[in-house]
Image (cartoon, rainbow, N blue to C red):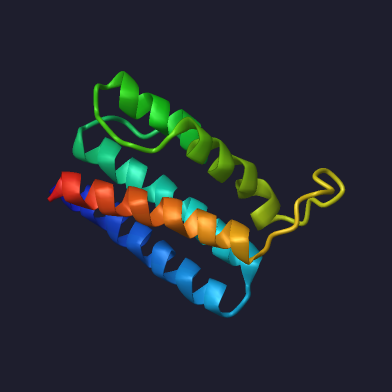
Length: 128
């Protein structure tokens, strides 16, 4: 594995571990943010390993599309990508006036962690 891809994947793992710790502490916003960041960094590690230039984006759907355009197989679904994209801003900033029905909770966090773990494990396996 390329050194740069390894660094991104290591950061991804740290975000996953952080999300799990934050969920156990009922810190839902940072848990969701770390779940999203885990996936973002894992996908960017995959791009780097395949010598694909990184785009400055936090959109999981956009990264997934770049991966698919380059004929790399990854199992993250459209629904999972949309979920992670939908939690990115509200988990990072207090946007309740923009998204009044966003209320992070344990269920959303468990969903985010499950997606993050799936993507991290898959990318880790691909890059071995």
